[in-house]
Length: 445
Ligand SMILES: Cc1cc2nc3c(=O)[nH]c(=O)nc-3n(C[C@H](O)[C@H](O)[C@H](O)COP(=O)(O)OP(=O)(O)OC[C@H]3O[C@@H](n4cnc5c(N)ncnc54)[C@H](O)[C@@H]3O)c2cc1C
Image (cartoon, rainbow, N blue to C red):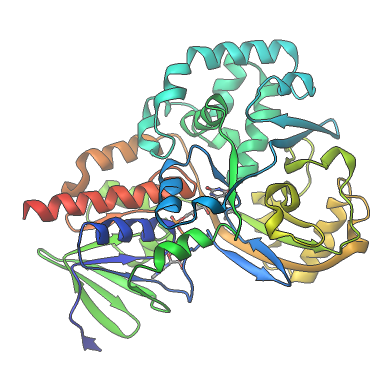
């Protein structure tokens, strides 16, 4: 093994968290290197080109409330590549498609998704919460810690009724995070209401969502195919071991999923250890590309995303319809991104691609009649660690971690979606936060 000269900061993981961290460190003129296990950047925020289609493998949407990622998109010249999706999404109730507009909550009532009494009670609760919904940051999960005392199902059943749990929170939580309301903190669920309260629009990037991490990485020193196997925290440096070398750094940002972080780093600090023990839900994304002749049913003609609540579903929890989400990604035919529930994914993870496609397309026929006869190509993306759980207590622990910041674990900082909001913007914010801690520390040394 060679003993290499090492830069001042090493970021481990070139997902959006690690790249954002490295970008802010580089901007602050710190010497920074990113070590990435795979041969590409972006992690769960990547796009594949498949026979003329652009397939978002993991993350599907940005939001007009993603302030940090939108500012990075502008900084990297992608501002005019940002596209709004169609304003229409839909949730199924009693087998029927209920069309909704996130920027107009009245559709919950007029579409028949929720009854009058549930809408009034929910509207009243939202009004009572308006200050928090309007002001707390939508990319810093620790700011929501004062709501981190109960599950969203317990709150919604008490404050409104179970229809709101079953037809609003459950399909959104499972469709976005592959998780159930009983195991999800009210903190995370209120952020979903906050996006609606602020009339946020779903956005995409015309070249696919992966173009943003690629652009950020283009100005950074990223070393590919370099999985880190262990990290040892010393008194005045950190030693990083990869398969072929040992590096020393003054600081490390560990921007990989918690499960992996826990495997290669033993922190002496109990809170850091608990955060690295965060578990993840799973999903499988089946990208179905159709022939030119395939037509969407009228009820889904302008809908960019369909959510199926647990009461109504077997395996499929969400279907993204690319022609209404980002037409640039599906220039001919349709591209459907079909996501499976956590339970279905875990039981189907080791099935062959063909078996998954056969099973899932049969189920999707219920909403897309004639689909199986019009399939041109498919791609399967298995995500064993799709999204970190937001069990009760995670927001409080994050607040504690951030307040004590570097004193907890001197030279190694954690970043990634489990260290903030469980989506791209949260992951990016956690990277920025970690970079700022290091810049502050370095300026005091
Ligand atoms: C199916 C799906 C749909 C989603 N939809 C959305 C959405 O619509 N909108 C949204 O905002 N978010 C969405 N998300 C969530 C979003 O993709 C993630 O929250 C975000 O991309 C996580 O970024 P990260 O940098 O924390 O982790 P990752 O993207 O997982 O990046 C970690 C990186 O570290 C690397 N790595 C791992 N181990 C090592 C090691 N030992 N050494 C070196 N490198 C290592 C990995 O290869 C990877 O590149 C979705 C996720 C999935 C799976």
